[in-house]
Length: 196
Image (cartoon, rainbow, N blue to C red; front, side):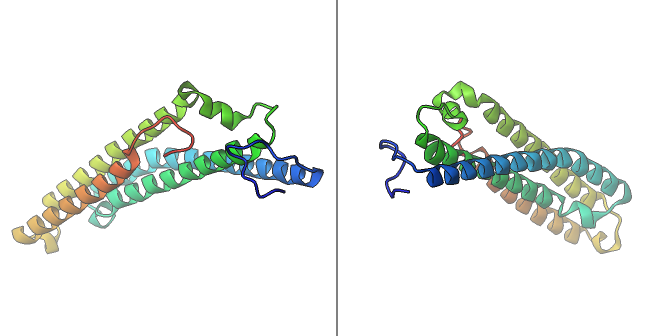
């Protein structure tokens, strides 16, 4: 295969081995996208079901050990979602700019997605939906954690200054982590397959 880049120039003639290699890359990347989309669905569904359930039972039983890290677990799940979504974007970008450009006579799916903003509208709303889910679950978990600690009757939290200090420190930490993750997540909610 030629060292000439696909983008910006005319397609370079391909021999049969080159075509086989490109088609194999295409198939592999499409399968990877399919697997990632499956993981994203599982991650989103699991987060929406497990986190509120865990939060509820932890409050009922005063399990501070579970409540304190729960907002951080939610933040980690949001970062995992972003990593998975970025993997889909990278695979789609590669297909659009390094595989589909080799076959200019055939309209490719990824190039079609990039052609007009309306073709990517669902992706934008998916991102907004997950951001909303993340914010709601994160705020509820953080508020529940702080309230449970404040109202706890556990012996090590019986001193007012310990409880106040712990709540203040956790509130600052929760705000910082939530702000950083939400800021990264919401940075430029664009309608694009090539940018997060």
